[in-house]
Figure 1 (cartoon, rainbow, N blue to C red):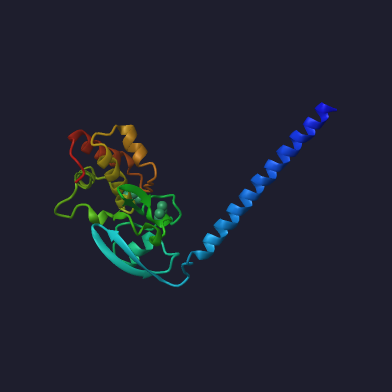
Figure 2: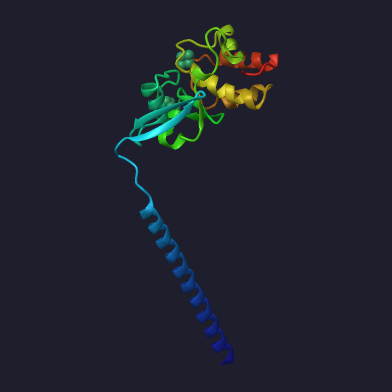
Length: 202
Ligand code: FES
Ligand code: FES
């Protein structure tokens, strides 16, 4: 009997703590819903945004649904990043966000306002190419050229992190970029040339 009572007490105790836990979770959920109520919704109307691109600040007014790629190409006339698949498969739209390569077709402009954005226009100039850009020219690493800015951006990020990457590291860095013309051997040769020269990308 004594054993039965203590088992009952035990079960009561477990039930009480389960109820207390559920109540605490319900209270936390209610609080988070209240805090959402306090937040100002954005859109669908255009919002003012400030983007930092290639060392300059740009103010644009766009709907929150607009992608970074769209703003770069159609508002800022920075057309180096290409729109090819528009669904995160080809890498033609690659830019750097705080030095890291990203697909700009998959980023909303409004979510990258605090970050440093670098596009191909922010690297070398025709008269002063970066080593990786020069190596692409010297190794004939392009045909139609549509994929080229994306590859250059991905490799620029790689060489910023490591000046002498291995072939495997070069291929891995380019794994998010597609070249439909099939210039991969020349692209990898260009990257290897830079790696062997020990030059930095800037
Ligand atoms: S256009 Fe962005 S990944 Fe293809
Ligand atoms: S050079 Fe044409 S897609 Fe790569």
